[in-house]
Image (tube, rainbow, N blue to C red; front, side, top):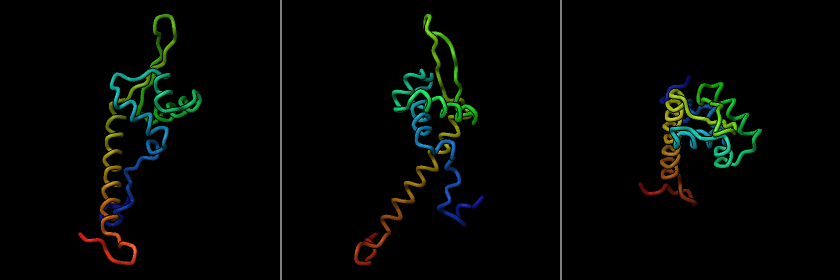
Length: 122
């Protein structure tokens, strides 16, 4: 792994499992609902089809980031999903790296030359 000093823009902490758009949306939805969400709510919040949602949840479950619970709401079957403790920690670590990406990009933009080749004032 590259060190921050040797490769400051490597961003090794950008986890490929999390970084995919749909999974990023799922984890963001779940972190804001600590008790978990019903499958149908996740589907609506993230704009996914049943098949897409199932597949992305499977990837997240296999990575130990989410837990999927099957039960009943009255007589109706209901699937609920929630973050695991490890998933919450891993997602928060990912967000810290993402914040660094945004900060680095903003700083680089401030230092970038203006059109015409002049550096922007500090």
